[in-house]
Length: 82
Image 1 (tube, rainbow, N blue to C red):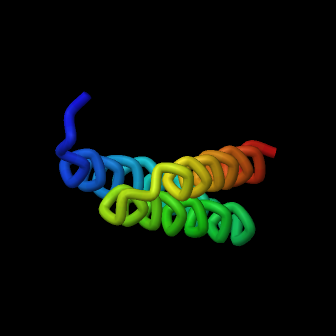
Image 2 (image 1 turned 90 degrees about the vertical axis):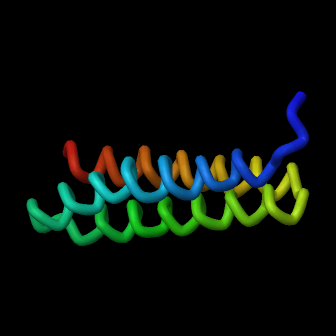
């Protein structure tokens, strides 16, 4: 396994937080779904914190933040879809 955790943290912060969640935030704002926007904002914040958990070598905190982020992204998608 590669010990370069900083590269993984940057990938999580940029790819997951900015692109995926940013698109979900834009879609929910465009259609006026305030709750979906707040869920996607929380998802982006949790993904951002997951990157810092890797920086500080906290694998359990990373898994918790990533799980929260995924759950909030699913909740935002469900609010947006229904």
